[in-house]
Length: 163
Image (tube, rainbow, N blue to C red):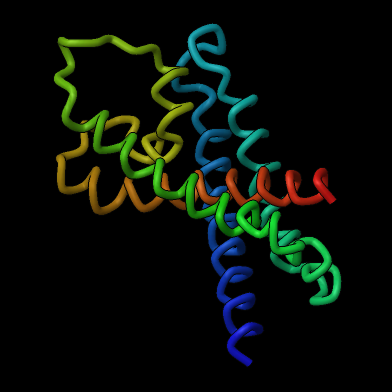
């Protein structure tokens, strides 16, 4: 019983990550008129996030038998589960937001493409400079969910490849 509850929580986490990633991708798509395409490839980012989100949602909604076939591994390969990839990537997301929040603006001038590649959730506050509190309590969790979806999709692909 505990095993199935754990798997259900893992699938729910991937579903939530996927939905948030689709929504962040939609925000990217709606901001294509904000900056010229030569400065920022809005549509490319939007399509990439949308695709990752849809794949994550699709994986989370797979029938139970198919999902078990993907996630169950022999004991020596157990460390490479899709959920572990999801968690590892999700841990990286808030750290990047915190890093961008504490680096003074004059110290480094990263390009828009670099900032939004490392912090997709930062697109939510594109027209304002968020406070440290907003960055840590709003953007960091959103960024963790987006990175979690990416990690879950990569982990699932990796699990299928080593099968």
